[in-house]
Image (cartoon, rainbow over all chains, first blue to last red; front, side, top):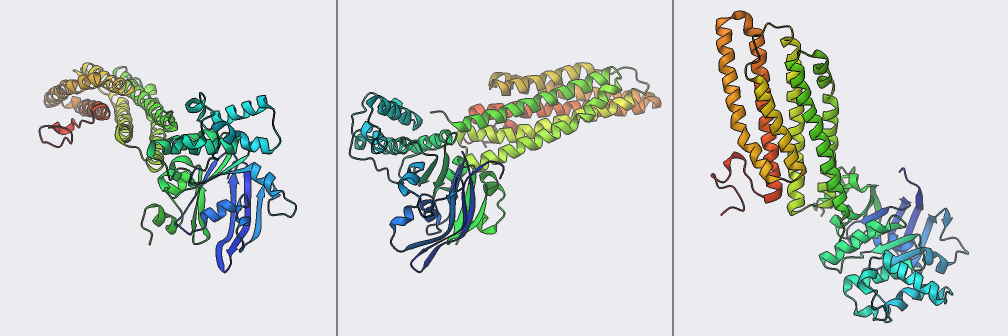
Length: 253
Length: 226
């Protein structure tokens, strides 16, 4: 890999009780690129994604070993402030989940919690975040409108703006477009393409064509193991592993 | 909405235009070399073949990536399928230019009366290639149709040259070597014109989704014709 690495996982194992959900995953995720995680349901791709900002901590019987280094720091080390970590590593979910508040307050929520109350600074953050999430033009005349009154695609871009408002380095996206129509999906995909200039993006998607379109690197997971990881171009034209080829061509199972 | 896919399509088109200008220059130089007995220029055409070949591979690879990663449809799909064929046509045009350039070395040493209609035929073939490339660059289907109309002229030149050279060879054995090369050049020019015609047909296919090769309308294989 020629570009600089942002996230390194080393021998990452995760158990949910008896279930070995991630098996020895070692993966280098490059900075300012889009890395897609693909694989059939239950393969571990979402579990892996959630382990990158310790979302699995919230699950009682999850046990993790190995390491996840972001900018060289092990995020599972004692003394890591998980709130700080999640500021740095933002997350966008499958179902858009704006707060039942105005568009403005949705985006300003994180900065306010972080102690920013100056109206001028908040205005700037809100405008810049909505601009970066390609939503500003559609909502700028009515920022007081409820976030819940927006369309599904707009709500998802609002959630992206909300994540950007706390100035993260990494964006984790778990099926960010799977509940959207094709036009809204295309907008999210274009947005991902633009965002990678400034952010490192890791995206889980069931839609292989989407992985092909938006990502620079693709990792194929199967039953908790990383089967193949390479440039997306290579995965989708000349994969090395037969299992990868069978999966992406739809011959699986 | 801006599509970043657009940039990839434009990149592909730019590379094809580059390929077109290399092929066009190879044809032009090979004919100039022929008409002036200029073996240095002929050698340059032969040496330039590698560049055309490597660009062909580069374009092919980029098309594979676009097909695999972007799943193009409708006009984008037609453009990419046509790009694949045009790329191949241009590479073959480069090969024909090299064939002509190779004949320059023999013809320069041969006794020959005249090039018969070859200079005129070369002019028409070059014009066809130029117009075919222009029609691609500007998506100009009218210019593309003009190219198709010129193909008969080339075929007639080819037949006439063939007949004239045979007559010469019958009358004068010493004209056989030059005669064989003149026929070879004429055949290569005829192929270049055919390939220019193919390119023009692709331009019409991209713009109108209409298959016009092999008189497709008459044999009812046009998907969109009534």
